[in-house]
Length: 102
Image (tube, rainbow, N blue to C red; front, side, top):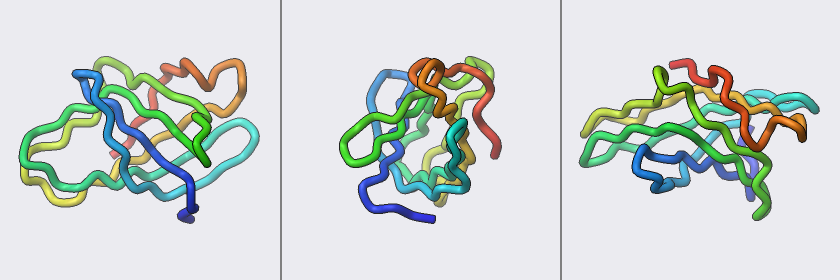
């Protein structure tokens, strides 16, 4: 499902941010699963975290494990990655458990 006003913001290893299209795979009170659709780029990219925003409000963010960043090679086609975010208020801001599947 796609939703107006819903954004996935990927965070690169240098701290810069890039908003990408995403598909909501599932959502309940405890977690949110999305599929990020990362467009092609002229240079290689390494993403180390992500934020989820809806209607201007950050729902939560997650730092990816150091051994599992999202790596996108230069000139690759559209890349898709599944990500998961805990939506429990006590953990959603700093969740660091494994989050990536390719």
